[in-house]
Image (cartoon, rainbow over all chains, first blue to last red; front, side, top):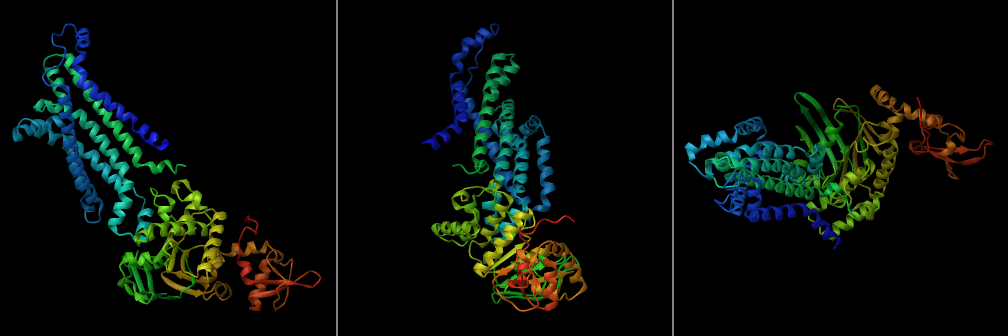
Length: 253
Length: 317
């Protein structure tokens, strides 16, 4: 009972943050009188083109797909350049990925639209490229964090390379890999709003429309939800990181 | 148990081990000793194929070691190193059970074995099984490292300067522990060190290396009594400190009361350095001990001199 309580309490922050986010997204329109009062000069003080719940969902899926793609690439590349066969390619891979990071996402979007067209596709590309570097750095740093004495011991006890990778390198790398994912995803949530400029519908839409129409309440509504989403996602990662390193807390009675 | 025949290992043109012939019999406690870069660690690491030899043959249990897969070979040999290398994310129980788990032992069998090993290394199982390595002191970690090396009851135990990073008190306690385990289990142990005191205390046989070659190979008494070479004398000269320490203690603290022996007698107040000299000059490994009035008190054995335990006061030079 006690243990279950502690377990629940560990997840209390992200759970309540998520509940708050859902509540705000679904109930934003009920706040219309408040926005009217705050921005009396504004004729339309509530964004009503699409429901906020749908925008949130679209935003989440854009982030999930682009970050997921970046993670997959980072894992494959990171594992490869830390194995004996791929070690020589590490500087090349790292500088390619760093180049991806130096391109501002807006520029990638602008370049991608003529090639791929308007909509979600250029956004996936830009966001995945932009999010790749922190993830790859996390994967490489994580896989290299296992002390050489530990790897040596694993080898000398008769573990096969695959067993060392799976049961020693991976668990020791996990918290650092997760830290990379956390940075990348949190930035991605904010950056994804820019994708609304090329026609993707998400929490950036009220912001972009608000900016072009000098509508501050729209900007505020989009920004509030985007910011809240980023903080919520971060709190999930914080919890996950804590769970992954439970051994660092030591033995509990 | 382990036979090196004309074994050679080079690193970029420099020979680390040159034409090594060494036969290690079952049950021996062999200490490989020598200065840094003398080839002793390379020799040890060639036994479980952490280092592959270039030429010659190494046989284990009658078979060339290359006929085993490296993993199978290593699972039959315990291995303990100076930096211990415990898996930080695994409990002590899981750490010790590593090799049994790799060998597919049933879980209850592993748990029983872990319990037994913790007791053998004087760690209370109830206190330790669920702890993590970072919660242990250096000495406790090394005990767990030794327990892990012994877990699957290996035929050979390989140790690479296992006590080098420990404080003197802990080091001596663990040296006694490993000596006791050797006596108890009769396991073949090969240990690398550069500490001549440790070698003299632990070994049934000392192999002294220099520049990739064996300079002398014999019992601790052999090396002390008949150094084959100036280099051996020089190397043992580092044990001068040990000899000096012997000079600070007297026969009275070490002798075995009521035991008899032959030879010219030592007085109870004779210092151990002189006693050592008497053993060597008389070519005996035990001597009678007499009271100051000349009546028989007991005997002193050569091995009693090798206990550099806490009985001796610390030395300031």
